[in-house]
Length: 481
Ligand code: NDP
Image 1 (cartoon, rainbow, N blue to C red):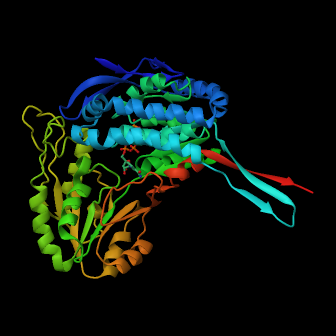
Image 2 (image 1 turned 60 degrees about the horizontal axis):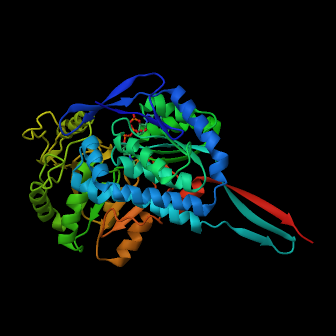
Image 3 (image 1 turned 45 degrees about the vertical axis):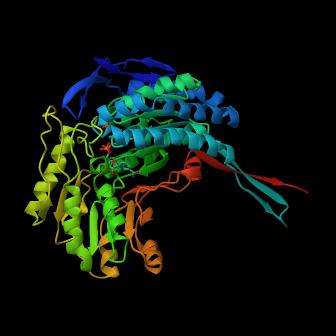
């Protein structure tokens, strides 16, 4: 059975504990590889490698750093199929999705930051009258930690690593123990691209052990974390007394606001995707759908029809729209929310049951589920489920829609469907979310700031925001005569 081992100082190595975790294929429910169960000793070893690499890497020219990042991007592109297959097997997502989204985006992350670093400028301020010239030095932080979740494994892992190393830092990174495979494969790509040893160190293991050791390490200067809000809170508590820089991209419960004046057919097609893409396991999925009363009954009928056409099955079948959920515990968590919805008085309009896929009977499949709710404050409408479950509810006025959209503790993204430009502006200003999509969803330009408000996170990544996060701004003030 294949062993997923650490990549430290440019070499693959077993965990010092010699302990292993099982890695499941969600489509079959079977163990297909084992993962290094690393602990604080492995993190300390990775830190030492990163520390030793820092002086060389931070003094490497921008051109050279950029060249290596672009080479990594090209190598990921060349390995599109094997990487996409690895992602689909590890995560349960349709291979078609990994081929179209996950792996191309991982490559784009390296390409984007390989180019962005060549354009990253700092500011200068001349104080005329005082006779001083200020300029801002933007220096890399040192060794930084990157921790990513299981839903978009290589996509989010590289979203952090690429800007961190582009800016001249060295990295200790941990992917989710639930989906470690593509992060494991990234090591050999980095070696082939000529990334100096120790610049990127990838350590596998559980959150409470390996992840916690990264956050608690006194000399790891910054943590870029994507994951759940409760974990983010724990990380903040651990890191705050050490005054580490923190970027936290956390959970969401995103509203999808549908007005009667929208382009109905386009809205309907995209709403099916924004609800159930990646089995609903995208932090940006629109899991609370609010529809203007005048089109509510029509939308309900059409939405159910379209959703019931989705094909659930083997991630490797090209006709599959939805694969398996990522793990058994996660499937059980999602099912518990469906049961809760019924207890709370919600009405299951479609789905709600596990699916037995022929030949894959032990896989973690679940029907796409639509729940009509009558109170936007009920728990299924307030808590992040992070699976193929959406709630729907009508609204009558713009004010009511806005109140319901903002009536949660989260504030990651929102989608607005309307043809009214004035409403677009009014609502965009008032919606409490880091990202507002209007008449589209998941449209991403990597130059734009990305992140959440309220309990969805702290800080922004993307574009120069990420390069600012991974650098220390130092003002130099020169007096001249
Ligand atoms: P978790 O918070 O459980 O885990 C995220 C990562 O943190 C994993 O690598 C995990 O390791 C690790 N981890 C867990 N505990 C600790 C700890 N004490 N110290 C350090 N690291 C730790 O999230 P999930 O993996 O379940 O991902 C789903 C969540 O991620 C959802 O809430 C989703 O909304 C959010 N998310 C947010 C995004 C955003 O951009 N805002 C994007 C994508 C997802 P391990 O898995 O090995 O336990």
